[in-house]
Image (cartoon, rainbow, N blue to C red; front, side, top):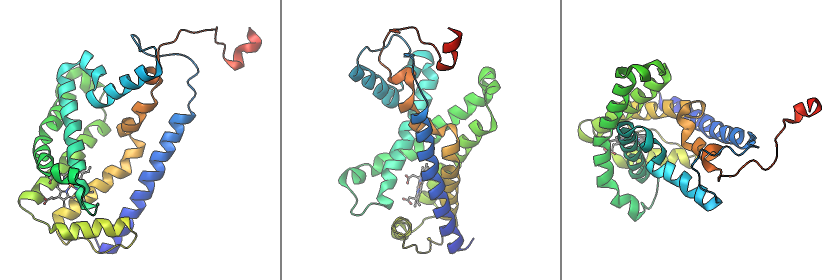
Length: 239
Ligand code: HEM
């Protein structure tokens, strides 16, 4: 693949990624939620509901109640991904903020540990009959794709080295619309193409749960009883 084609592809995927996410969030916002449907027991105040959503996002509290092994696997998986992505910020920020510098060692450990919860999540989908029954190709595909991204990243770090100054020049060039050729390291090109594939798929997939969790009425609504009988507008004539 030529540099020009890769750069063009990166911009096309970038546009689809941003427009796709904005459109999905618009759909979440435009979906009416006229009835109180908070899952009980629920907090009765708005700050209480905000704390509940924060707990869901940071600690997966809701999942912890129902499935402890899955909680551990899913939590480690997401924390690992977060640390990897946070430490990757050094490829696009200049000067690199102190907190990103401090995260580098943790980011490398996270990169190593990440495949373990990932393999557990994959194993669970294939080995537990009930989970296999509700699993489709996308569920497995996305885990495999993330595994390949992490695998190619680890390979780059320890064997197929890439000059990080060139990586940063390439990424910053893309972001400032002054693109330059990518580093000529095939493993880097593979790592980058796999990330583009993930970004292309993201807005159309259930990976959007990353944003959707904030728009889930059963979680963000404070507890409220129904104050009046609710009749669908199109049923009013029928009484
Ligand atoms: C979903 C997105 C991504 C994931 C999950 C991911 C994962 C990883 C992992 C696990 C490593 C090895 C450990 C480490 O150095 O942190 C790594 C290394 C690396 N990644 Fe990524 N990566 C992603 C996106 C990207 C992007 C967008 C770029 C740049 C365009 C990039 C460039 C690199 C480079 C250059 C290394 C080698 C670091 C070194 O040699 O020290 N990654 N990646």
